[in-house]
Image 1 (cartoon, rainbow, N blue to C red):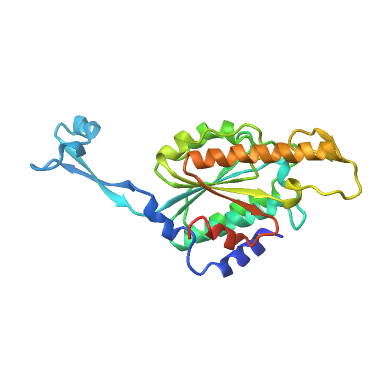
Image 2: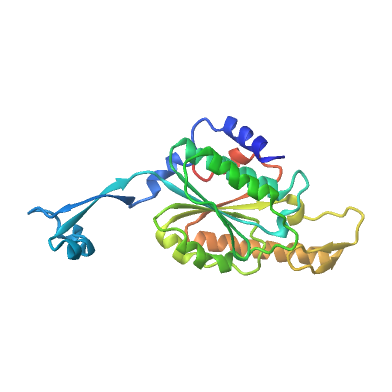
Length: 272
């Protein structure tokens, strides 16, 4: 499925918005610069711009206006493990989720800021409230060559913090198959965070299809059917238990989005 088809399909489904009801959870809006003017008796001295004051030789006040638009930062981790799916590829499901969230954001005239990561930052999509901005990032997700790509959310958190200058709603997306669980403490201290874990039922509950070896796409380790497959399943279940415990610890609302799910209906559970 191409980006245009995904955009049309998600646009038709979005009659309200996914993020508008969530905006009240974002406290402390940002401020945009408006103008500089001379100090007038009675002004708040905390508003003095000391650099402008030094240049002008007299007290100068910095006037700002509140920016009430919600800033939504969508962070998607790409990896080779997304190139899998029984109903459709996890890569496509992740792209549809980004399309749905992005179009909901721009429909509200809020600010959409997409970021693509693997082990390092791949794409900083910039901030915009235009539909074409959403389409471009969806195209990047669908066309990105995943072979050999490894995601590392744990390594990305520090870089991510530097890319979010203001308090935002941050949506984390990926299959989160990496063994190391990220430390979300700094991210949630300054932002409202939700998470979408993209999965396929078969990878969590493998069944016998006539083959006798299962290859873990993350570690490339071979598991022989029988005890080995059970070991693989138990290992993934233990990993997910730790992952969702970390989400709960930091009050991050999280869902699993499967390849056979209705994407928009499932996403709505994060906000409604």
